[in-house]
Length: 87
Image 1 (cartoon, one colour):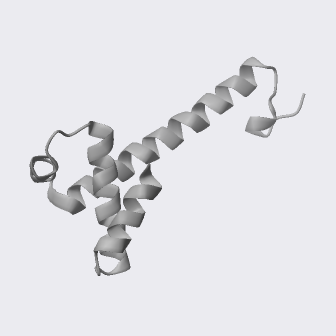
Image 2 (tube, one colour):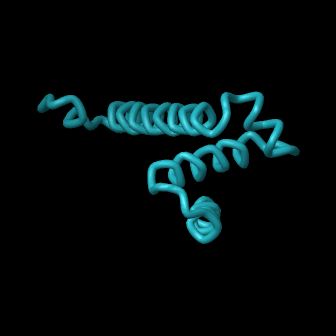
């Protein structure tokens, strides 16, 4: 779905690449938050830049948690190579 948002922004905007990327991230944030009203959601969350930053922070946290989960799984399964240790 996020690819769809990006394609729509590219097709309907002549904004600079950086601005178009921020618009895409802001709309993805709104989609994730299930906003009933895009204008209101943007206004309440710091506009395009604020929403893009919030989406990026969510993605960074998601990535961090996925890496932590992977490391924990490796430890629970007996693998110590995740930490540079050998048996």
